[in-house]
Length: 198
Image (cartoon, rainbow, N blue to C red):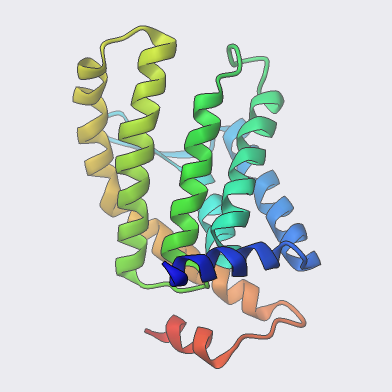
């Protein structure tokens, strides 16, 4: 319990940093731009991989679950208003999904702990709880479709996408860490540097 409290309090302290605020705002803007542009990789059969989740993961990895959850709210709400011409009425359930996603990214990857197993674990939690669980529930409520019919489509899709998205997450976050460490004034503790080498 104390370890989780430590992670949350440490993440909350990140909000005092100008670097945290600036990079989080930049990643939110990139995420919204990617969604608006519809940049995806199309794979057979009718599968698409978007890149927006990498921005959310980067926020959680760099600055923790508190900042990740706040970024999730901002990304969802600002993304809704930015794409309002093509979207229906605002539904707060998707904002809750974004908050839970930010929590998972922070719990699995913060403080800048990256390994292939952490990437797989984080993406598996996102796919299971957010994509299959919460988003299916919201689609049932807003679309009036039977949950069983939606699950029959969404479960196989998320299982097929998991290894591809986990690999994309791992290599994407390695690049993010490299760029983050290259920023002027970045000071990393020996503990964090040791964790990243594992």
